[in-house]
Image (tube, rainbow, N blue to C red; front, side, top):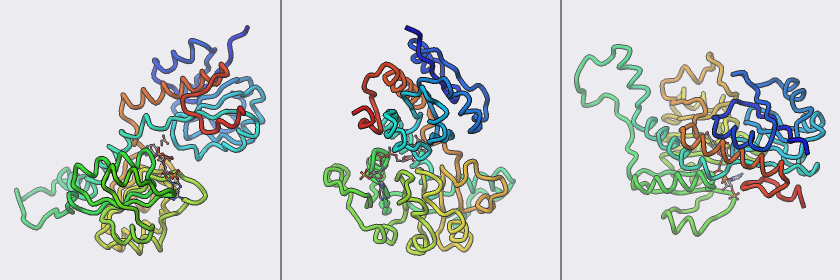
Length: 326
Ligand code: NAP
Ligand code: GLV
């Protein structure tokens, strides 16, 4: 029997590629920049399986261009770039990578929270610019306490729970708002459920860990920012479009909220001349939530195993649409 053909749209670490090469002929897109839609469609024409990243638009047009496709494996937990319903209607299972990256993403969420609260990036820029002329000044660089502050988590999924777990170590008072109420998590992490508007009004730190869906697009816009405390800090580790960037810019510029910390932006990459980048009260990182080496390797290996399982017609470890094969 001929070996299946697998398309991998980004270079992976060798240990992950080896998992796929053991069972399939693999074509890896070699460039730093991702393939354009037409390049992707051309490459996928003969593929039996495709390993995608958040930059690949997996839609009806791609599926039309790939008539042999019998598995999609996404190297991410977020699937907002994938039309899962379309794949399901064609009987194509979609693998993804939940869980394996939750702790690393929660770690980064806390790095952002701490950095924004204690103004680490802002004061480092000042120091590097020659601003540190007096050894100690009692009123300089006053930030906010993290310990015993109120944290509001929006989206209590796998990442949200890891954030709640970390907040306990900082003696934070944590409330959450999510689509589903979780009494088990309330007991385990000592957290309380709140309606969205109550969370926004109460929290010193509003942490976004929802998926991007039609319901969460611009979940945070002008009215929601107006509900936050003037001392409030917004942290987004979910997807950029969950926050309306123009409304955030205005709220930060006018100091209607104190600070924000973003790992994700809209668009990505953010333009170098984006007005948000002119603001001192913004901490920003380039979508690195899960970018710790052991985590990334484990995530790649999971995506590789999902791809192989799909190529072999076996159940995946993590499948977003198991009904596709029913
Ligand atoms: P998850 O386990 O599916 O958790 C998402 C949570 O959000 C679930 O509890 C879900 O509710 C809740 N939710 C969904 N829609 C909602 C809504 N409209 N209002 C309130 N809550 C809602 O996913 P996860 O693994 O925690 O990941 C969450 C997202 O983080 C991913 O989708 C991805 O976009 C992003 N992410 C970013 C990075 C990064 O590098 N920055 C890394 C990994 C993931 P239910 O419990 O009812 O389903
Ligand atoms: C990363 O952003 C992911 O969704 O895994």
